[in-house]
Image 1 (cartoon, helix red, strand yellow):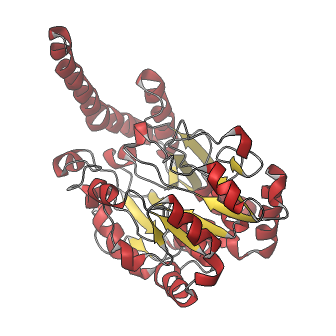
Image 2 (spheres, helix red, strand yellow):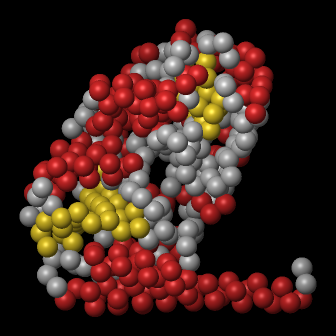
Image 3 (cartoon, rainbow, N blue to C red):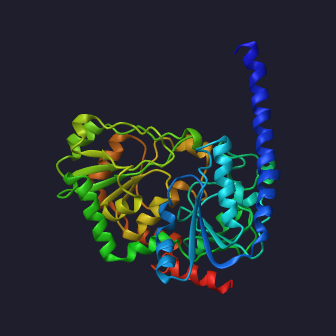
Length: 397
């Protein structure tokens, strides 16, 4: 590193720190206060999407249900946190704060330093639907001792879960984990269920998803579907997906009976490529199909440390855990439950073992363990979560 770069690096870091301090500790709180001159509208609901330019699937069911009642004024805000910077980001947040100032409810599904830094009006209730079920890999305060997490002092200064009135989770079993991760007092995290799982109880919806999947990959129509959905590695800003499947070898072994559909985490910008010779056997459907589409259609789910396995347990079908980097991942982020005891399916750490587990997936499934897993972690996801959440909203008036 040159002398100039040695001098420049700490200067740039200090500038970023100063800018962050100014934005979240001074500018955004004061801007919000200026927007609070008008009264809160009792029927106004703001959906806050932190990262993406359209509402994530966490909001689908509750948004549609609220819209169908005709009783609410629904607004959406997209701040693109960590995806855009500078003045463009500031303008997005300002527009969001203007809507938030007169909203009776704000609904989000993940961490928000913006919502946490402002003096939220007492009339406004913040609801975090959360984007995952169960409690698998650690997050928030639970990762302060891990490489993935921020230090406690930073989280004290820039919290992500302040001002919340309600956090919905998938079962009473996991309430403690969310209270720990979000540093919340008892009573805010409630096992009302996860709204988006309601649609898995609609047979017509499930069947339509299978048809949609087959329209995207016609080869899947007469074969069994393997969903491969790994979580990301690294930090959010530089997220990568594992490249640990030899697709030609898997095609040779499985191609007559199966297809593989790959769904990478939305944070991953450059996913691994599938060889051209395997395009009739495997397809990256990340940009074409939602995780709901795939969970409904899959006959077998292969994941690693992703919370989607909780949702998939509702279907009581085989799961395989491809944990080739378990030790490194555990050091990086950690888990709320012992991984070996917790997983309701075989754990494999190399491709040969994964192939063997796929070939024998149906015959080796432990249905009692799968049922116990579903009951323990998904008992509040019974098809009526959205109704309970909306009733909670009405009870606040």
